[in-house]
Image 1 (cartoon, rainbow over the protein chains, first blue to last red):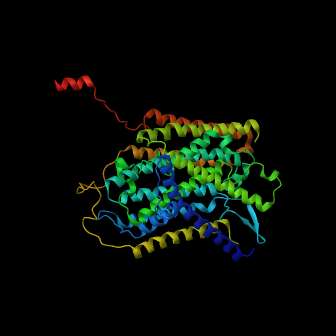
Image 2: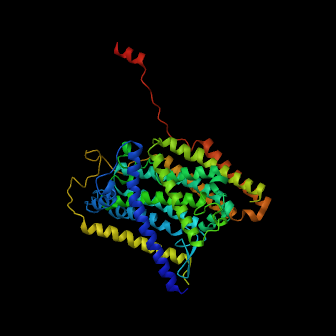
Image 3: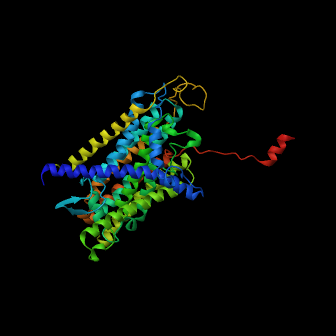
Length: 343
Length: 135
């Protein structure tokens, strides 16, 4: 393949992923509202379009047409930069997540991942850590007490759970011996899913993912009753939409990472033994990946509308005194498992 | 040849362009009519009191320090995890010793009380005390 063919194929993949992601984020908001309505026995959005299906577009255009109010005490540069960082980080992470195996199309071998880098997991970890800056800048630069408190709380929460997230990932790496997401998925062939082999690590990772994405029960940074809106109290118009989109995009990334690292990614147990033709297999595998991700997203929403918010001391206790020792224990468990069974 | 990191580079540039374009379109079509009242910082409808950059608890700083230490240890643990299977029992023992030291550090922080946060101490009103006050 010449370099231009590679670039064009990459561009097509990137465009596909970005469009797909924007649509999923838009409809995730819709589904969140519908599911919350369903859980609380209400109807949810049902006016714009058939069963409210055009609601996300109405929301986006409303936010685009709103006036952008910057408070006089704000640090203007940082105030503008913060939503940029949040959105950019949320987008850039999608590059390394494999949604399917290699496929042959029009004579080209195409990996169903934008970039199959050998340090993919580190890339995701690094970028999601950058997300803390978006929130901290937003909180500090707004010049509002609520924003500042929300920003400080949020950064403390995110860094606390990042540690146990890192240790949980170390457990996955022990089994796969690689940082590349594709290799990690391949290492979970059959029923060797990491969620089954290391259930403790799975739980600590999921809980940390909830805390990293600031979702209930860990949405302390926004805690409406005490902090108004937390770090985005002073944001309006599309800057606010930036944070909003970033939150949902982060949720999708968290679900995709959980699927990739613990639920076997695009693997369907023993599908290659069935003797299906190759294209069908790949399609089924991509379907399996999307289904697993969708299930995790549903789980995120389910938890949000079922469990009340933690108090701040409970949150920090859970992070440092429960999740952290558990993730250490998980590493020992996996190490022993490998020693005993020679996996 | 375009490496995998080159593709990531393209992706990152596209992400930046996309974000800038959306915010620019927003700038073109939104109204802009600032007034003094609108630009006040939100404080429940009152005029804001004092500096917005209030003092916050020193514990946040301590947590940041603890995070720094343990995150570096995560970084040190990753290379060990990646070559673990090649080293057999020796790798196992080395890893366990490292984790023990790490756990010891954790136990120290715990014992020193750096992980404690202020708990609310609610005082539920008692009926007989209230009655005493009444009389």
